[in-house]
Length: 160
Image 1 (cartoon, rainbow, N blue to C red):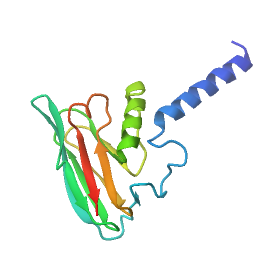
Image 2: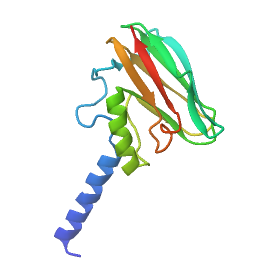
Image 3: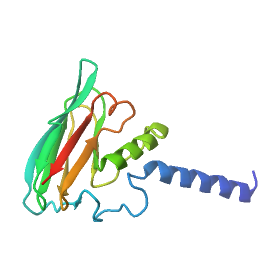
Image 4: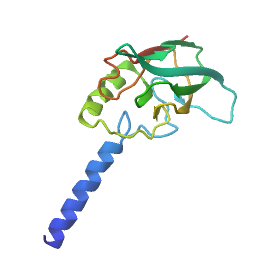
């Protein structure tokens, strides 16, 4: 392989890895940015704690609870626990963004998230997302691992 061909191959690998590691929303969806559904919270500030369990039972997958009501301006600390036997994740976004991201996850099922609105957990593990809800509306949270959302692993956040 020539030096030029080697460099091109190396660049192709780097660019494809970067795409696989990208989070929902693509470019401009960095940490600290305000979105249609709010912005990353400040872990040092007070927040209402909402515990969310992830599980699979009887061929269905679920979040408990799957409906959460929040006041506009409220900061929430989602304490996540994967009670299941499989990896699960919680991705907070608009329904449109999560459905679009789910298509990307079908193509790239091992996509890693490094976004403040998403957390993937191995079985029996815990994690958290701190989020400030700055806008009124209905928003989605889903497990976007291929097949999980379709098996019922989705929920709604209503911001009043």
